[in-house]
Length: 285
Image (cartoon, rainbow, N blue to C red):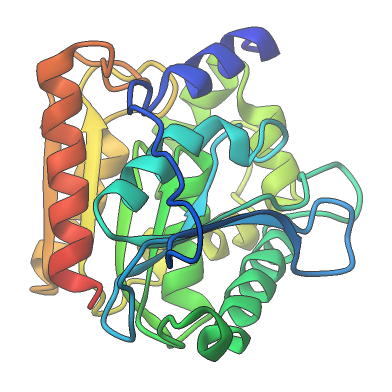
């Protein structure tokens, strides 16, 4: 299996490079709340960033970190959350329970996402934010959860931004590749089911695949064409399915980039940030 340290290195380099945004002083309206508890589970905490001059039309993003459903946390996308704030976009970056071999699988992680969203909606008046029409955004496994949540759980989602997310676990080519590179263990933890080459795929693999639940929600897909962890074909399959149903979306392919999107390159980072920010502003108001 890919070593945990390698995955964490990839996650920490993802969306790296935004200059931190300084909070406004005194009675100004920009606010940062850390470790807000949105549920009763140990990992049910989130960071909420609220820009100045916000209101009901200010885009609000629910941001989900990557980490193969089993590691990492909201701190790994903090630079990206700062970038959203700098561009006048409100957000909640959430932790969720980790998938395991027993009781925590994708339904429980979606429950956490739903609890976080409902907490934000319940505090809309207090925070001077919208109570619906949110944007889901996620990195890698977080992108998978963002898509799956938007398609299956809530009617309060206006758009999705997903970076390098797996979308289809019914594809035996992908599953066999995951087995080869050592990622089948975390996929089985996420689904709660096992996969064996040559044996019929358990229905949970389809149920946990965003591509089997597509709805008319605008989606921005950003993916490196040389990603060794989540094959680029996952994004291409989703784009093709959205094309077929004539659903608004955009696939931004980063030629030659791996799972970190080559964001250490300034020009690539600028492109990725610009695409994501524009999508959120256009579709999240």
